[in-house]
Amino acid sequence: MLKVLIADDEEKICQLIIKLINWEEMGLTVAATASNGLEALEQAEIYKPEIIIIRMPGIDGMELIQKVKEKLPDTEIIIISGYRHFEYAQTAIRYGVRNYLLKPIKKEELKDTLQRITEIYKEKNEQLNFEERVRLALKNDAGKLRTSFVSRMIYGDRERETVIGLREL
Image (cartoon, rainbow, N blue to C red; front, side, top):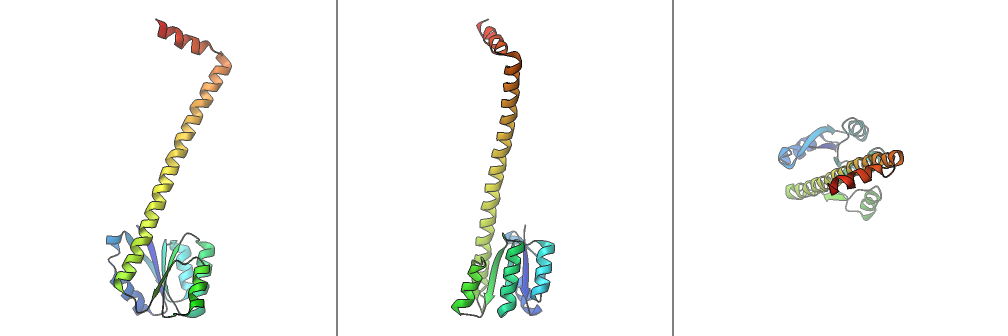
């Protein structure tokens, strides 16, 4: 399950967001909530969530995003904001935020955003699993090639001649 951290300066809003989504059904779990930027950063370092939902006004939210991205660059961040100013969104994008939802938050919009992020993580994990399998196969093949090479260096072509001789029998 992917871990989610919800950061909002109002505890009631954190609880509302928690109740809005069937987290388990989506393969997600709310690891923690935080009521300010410092607490959110501490929780992020402890739980290392894959997704952080931030609803904090102004500079506190932007500072949090910057610090989280420095420490946990692969974490996806969803901003819920009442700011419609281009500069605010532009700053968030510069820090690597791809998910910007305007208040009032709509359940389906949040759910769709979480689903999209979950799918991205699944694809990323499948790719990593494939790459790991390829790495292991190459490692095994490299070991076999080394053994074969050393054997040929020690025994020359006698081993091959023996195998060829057995085929002729």
